[in-house]
Length: 557
Image (cartoon, rainbow, N blue to C red):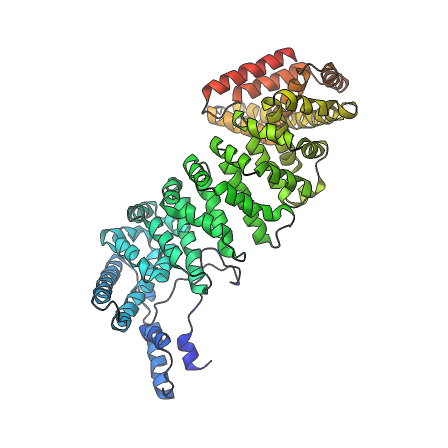
């Protein structure tokens, strides 16, 4: 490598998440101070008449600078203050020259390079988050945000390193101060405006987008409450626009799908905003590709799962169920279930979210109308082996299928309900036989878990430990995880079909219970426990009426 190449060489800065073309998983090293001579040399091009002697002098100078690298010095409060004040001076000088010579970049090129140098030096501050308060007190955060219009990549790179989640957790106090200052300066709105300007066909700018998304992810992980504010400052709109852009799949599209799923977690405000921005249609359009084709790479599969997760989150909001229905989401999920591609697993989960509760009534009726019973019952009768290959357990599959069945029995009226019940009578009640098979499978699993928990409780009492509410809640969650929730759904289906006024169904349920040593009393106990835990805590009136209805079914069982 000749001297010119050495001078022009710039290390790949990397991003929080490794881009596809970036090799290796090593964490990014702290950037060394950039040499202004090298930057200027790169910017202006190599003069043809430069002789070897001059090159060697410049190289020697660079080597000397490396020997007195500021990062080698002890970084203390005084040094950070000095660095920030230098940054402020250079920032002010750059701004002054830009205003004075707006049409003559050569006049402020020197100042711009000086400013870029000090921004690179400031990366060292990311190693001492307890001094982040100096960035705020000395107005550096405000100045950095102001520079997003013309030294965007360098500023984004610095902010991404300052907000690295591991660094933020090293000093909660310093992190809180920095995040507060960034939010006060409308950081998300400014970052979104900056991403609008970046051209992702240029690698450096595509990295800039990637690092910007990393900043959002870091802040959202540290302070989940800012997701609403971030979405409203244009981020949600930009993410949807980027996801539906007709561009080849890349690391940035994957990252966008991940950030979207994060914004929608446990947040009705962002779910509502996505619905208003026609985001349900965007998600359905993007997922429709996987109706007939499997993702071609592991990364594309990850993006598909992120989009399905986002869709499931959205369907937790009742208003979005209607948008999903109008956007023909049910038809798409039904086709995916029949296509036997990788999307089948997640489409089952989406149907479960779309049909659950009283708000899922319209979707339940429509599902029967589009012949969805022909799709769901084969999945109920036998858990496909391919499901296991996609990483989903039999329990998870059976939980979603039983939940869909329970939702339909709860919500369907008239002709559609009759069609559902008649399915249980087909082929000598084979669906009832399968239901009872699942009942005993999960009853056994829960009884095993109960025996273990009772043993642990007995041991705790013997040691003199107190069984408080938190401990009881933990035990209950373990029982649910062992299969109690699926067992509750199965028992609900059993009492529903037994009370449907079709003697043949009721007789078959009781016949199998007696044959296999089951007990009506045990089913009633499971259903009472289910009735107590029903509801989402938002609609007390629905909870009470549903509890009363379930108890009536139990009494008639």
